[in-house]
Image 1 (tube, rainbow, N blue to C red):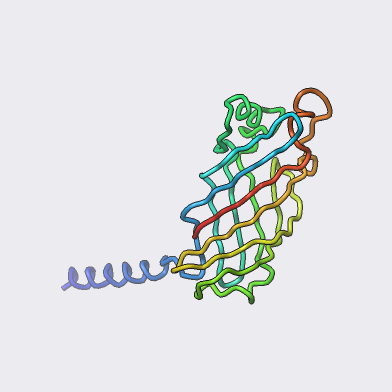
Image 2: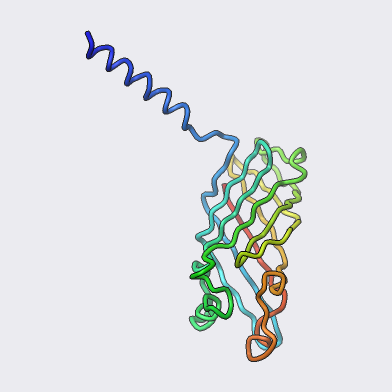
Length: 186
């Protein structure tokens, strides 16, 4: 008789556990992401891509979090990647991630359950190398067959994140303002 009660108790606790930890449909986790950086100067163009970022999006309150592992950027030239990760530039061993945490400010204009293309405004804080600055940018949210994609492009002034070169080759080869493009699929 005691064994039957134990089995029933275990079964009930298991069911409660399953329902308690079920991921809700309101919070989305990215399935695929791409972050591109682009720097243009008269001396050269510098491009890099990162496929290792993670992101979450709450359909209920519009909260967005994007975490970018800095050492995962891939450059056309190995030397560019070495400089990017170095102590003199982004020091990615000490500061391994960049992070954006914010909110869709016009959430009422987005219908995540209806196919379409929606214009959004995202506002929050970008942190790079332990320096945080407010960011507000336009984004395009596409909904198609249950797949949600967020696209945005922003300009980052390197000096705002304490990344600056006053002399030498980097001061001529790296733009003072770079473009960062996010494409995140949920």
